[in-house]
Length: 84
Image 1 (spheres, helix red, strand yellow):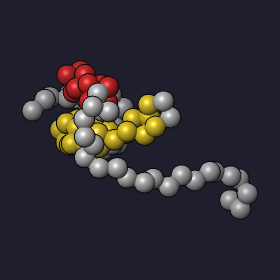
Image 2: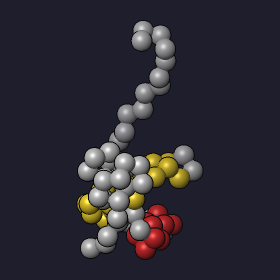
Image 3: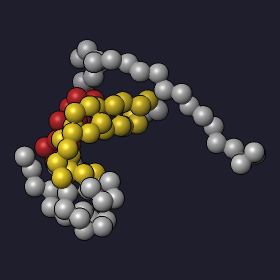
Image 4: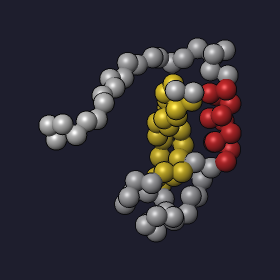
């Protein structure tokens, strides 16, 4: 377990949780699940330590050689002011 200290945004004590990390790489959305991160219980800010960040980089750098857990379809909407 890692001590993430206090939130840089609101000052509350960070708690370690497992999160989904979404990353946009060259126009493609990649999701890494079960990432250990410090999460602020007050404002929701998240941070990962350097070792976890390096592991995420390794996972996404070699994702073509690894079998994906699953693929999901994500609807995409365009925002427009009309009808707002």
